[in-house]
Amino acid sequence: MPSTTHPHAFHFDRAVDSYWEASADPPGIDAAPLQSEETCDVAIIGAGFTGLSAALELAGSGADVRVLEAGRVGWGASGRNGGFACIGSHKLSYGQMIRTYGLEATRHYYQTMHQSVALVRETLDRYGIDAWASGDGEVTLAHLPSRVAELRDEQAFLRETFGDRTEFLPKEELAARGLDGPGFHAGLKGNTGFGIHPLNYARGLARAAAKAGARIHGSSRLLRWEETPQGHVLHTAEGRLRARHVIVATNGYTPEDVSPRHGGKLMPALSSILVTRVLTQDELQSQGWTSPLMAYDSRKLLHYFRLLPNGRFLFGGRGGTDASDNGSTAYRPVLEGAFRELFPAWRGAEITHYWRGFVCLAYDLVPYVGALDEARTVWTAIAYHGNGVAMGSWCGRAVARLLTGKAAHGELSPVLTRRLARFPLPAFRPLYLKGAYVWYGWQDKS
Ligand SMILES: Cc1cc2nc3c(=O)[nH]c(=O)nc-3n(C[C@H](O)[C@H](O)[C@H](O)COP(=O)(O)OP(=O)(O)OC[C@H]3O[C@@H](n4cnc5c(N)ncnc54)[C@H](O)[C@@H]3O)c2cc1C
Image (cartoon, rainbow, N blue to C red):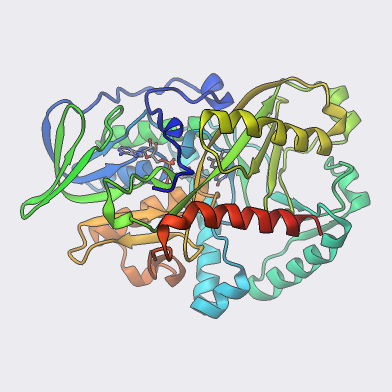
């Protein structure tokens, strides 16, 4: 495990100090720890969007499924993200993707991302989950005048390659749309995606999975994994779970020491969020930001932000490589400084919540869904590159369908199924990340 993943970031026994924790609906299920020796068909490690979506799919098709979660339901990134149900689960450029996987596979992947957003909407509706769904689409904002032309190029590329219609918003139009700010020079608006309360969604998924028959064990950290001729034996502090199949759904929190098949293949990276108190109508008007749209700036080390339905403002950023408590304290003024600079009218607005978590990158810079062993008993769906609200949900369902044979490998885009490669010299992953951030920071200035 790279040293960027400091032990302070793994206090599974502590609730996350997020606005979502403070405002979520009650869990509504009894996720008692595993305290005995049990047997099941499929054991799932991790109760985030991936693991819970897999559990819902499996339990719904009659499988005997249990979920082991080290903390509480949604303790990982799923309960603490920005709540952007959106596309963009890769860091590979579309051009490189087409060169590596081909145009057809890239188009298939692009459609899959759109389907994943639709899946979240359907799941909320079908299971009656109140996840504060808001907004319609997302907008990328040019953070420098020199980036305006790039947005126009992107618009043409998306239209020609995927037939996707986006809307270019010149600077004057931004103000008319309630997307104003001195640091925004133009926008590109897509029509896919919406904002949610992620912890309400995670808890709703858990209730639906439990109702379908899945048993979910909170405070049940996988500590040791034994593979025997009879199957897998998963050890927690107080119990043991025997399973024919295992799905590892731990994304940026993956314990490589316990799950060696993931060894050297993942790069956790920090993302941090702050939330303000409720802003008044006057404050919103004086800044010129009144839109419920999800927004990003065009930085490589991007900022993401949105007005919540109750008038609070959420502002997040990627960056920072020290996951310790001290590192968290040191990063807060950096994020706050960026927020105050981009939204100067809200300089005085109190920040009520600040927290962080891990997103997950893969060496190939695309997600992976599939088996990890030749016998096809160990499965994973992982590496959404900071955009896993929708894709985690879709990939969790997909890995469950592959496992049961309800879907065939060939039905998924090869972008998702090709391989989960090891990083060269994996011990240097923290250095790769630091180096990339220096390079990105330099690129973001020009
Ligand atoms: C601050 C932040 C903001 C983000 N914003 C967005 C956004 O706006 N939109 C978006 O699409 N994506 C966003 N993401 C990314 C998104 O949240 C993730 O891609 C997604 O939640 C991953 O879901 P998951 O279920 O695969 O993993 P996680 O939700 O991370 O769940 C993994 C689970 O595994 C558990 N676990 C780990 N080790 C063990 C073990 N040994 N035994 C048992 N359980 C274990 C953990 O406790 C955790 O609950 C953000 C992430 C962060 C951190």
